Amino acid sequence: MERYKIIKEVGDGTFGSVWQAINKLSGEVVAIKKMKKKYYTWEECVNLREVKSLRRMSHPNIVKLKEVIRENNILYFVFEYMEFNLYQLMKDREKLFSEVEIRNWCFQVFQGLAYVHQCGYFHRDLKPENLLVTRDVIKIADFGLAREISSQPPYTEYVSTRWYRAPEILLQSYLYSSKVDMWAMGAIMAELFTLCPLFPGANEADEIYKICSVIGTPTKDLWSDGLNLARAINYQFPQFPGVHLSTLIPSASDDAINLITSLCSWDPCKRPMAAETLRHPFFQSCYYVPPSLRPRVAVSRTPPSACLVGEKGTLEWQSGRRFSGALPNSKLTDNHSTVKASASLGTGVQLKLDLVNKDLSNNDKSLKSSARQPRYRPPGRKSPFAAASINKDLNAIGAADVADKLANVTIGNRRPYVVQLRHSSYKGWGSVDCGV
Ligand SMILES: Nc1ncnc2c1ncn2[C@@H]1O[C@H](COP(=O)(O)OP(=O)(O)OP(=O)(O)O)[C@@H](O)[C@H]1O
Image 1 (cartoon, rainbow, N blue to C red):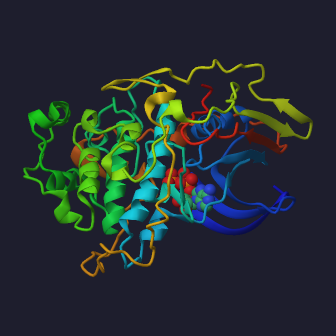
Image 2 (cartoon, rainbow, N blue to C red):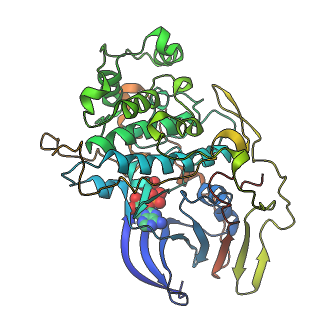
């Protein structure tokens, strides 16, 4: 760690505190996440979700994990540095974002998300704090709860921050899918337009109540699985007709409303996949380049390699393991649909930032949001697990804290080790570098 000069703390999450730092040699500014839990062996570290998922992924809209350092049993993740998170940009803001800004951000996030899902993962904790922004670029961060789509349900851990938590998780489904990320994105998109959370539940029961009051009580036709889930836990939905989202999000265009409405569908099957959203009319002004028309670039067939570097030099990590050449899960099965993961899934999108039309200071649809309710953070916003203690009314199963799972440690050496993650570089918009 002596290679870095710590500047200031920039974040404090459930699992770690995040610090801005400078690499003394290169002068590069980085973000260092210092994990709260101690790690006594490398095995525990390399099995962490954040490491396992991020070392496989390289995309311009996913925050890059540069290296992993273990020193004195403390684990540090070194990330590329991003200036803000979306929550910081929204809070205390008086003027609404323009639709152009929102479109550009969302288009990028959906590209990153399509890539994540295509690589066989889902994030499970998308929220404004985990979307990091530097100028016009937005990246998905915090893969601490990411799961492999191929991993076998039941998923018993308690996931995602309440306001962005999909109804199937709230109703304790063990079989949720990557569509939970799509629900979260619907809620985040709406919040970007209004600067207010769409479903600010004070607890889990209130969360479902708020969802019903906005999108209406689910019927058998809308979501029969949901009615079964509710029955199984003896829960009765409050009765609401729902409102048209344009009344709650008056500054959004019809296309934006249409997209948010489909993302916030009760039934996960009815939510679009990330790759599909990129072809939604809302993103019409963003270029889509079909895979067949994209310039062909040599694509690495080996996974991003990683080394453990300690006092004794370099040690191959997972050495000799050739990448199969297939996506981690060439056939991805979620509980509702079977998704064939191929490069043509639709992540082949070229971003065109709408800079031509962009006028950050002039938002023709902007409303001075005087009617805006003061934003508030629910208890435990930081912690996706904290809410478990207050969901008695939903008779929830409680959290299997990830940290607890990692607590099975053995005392190891105290030498500093570094895992350097050499990502194979992203090969242009739309190409997938998961080994395809
Ligand atoms: N690469 C980065 N650049 C700048 N700031 C960052 C970076 N990564 C994280 N942060 C800041 O630190 C905060 C916490 O980071 P992160 O979400 O990774 O921690 P966590 O312990 O997993 O949090 P959570 O409670 O959401 O699970 C983020 O919301 C963000 O503001």
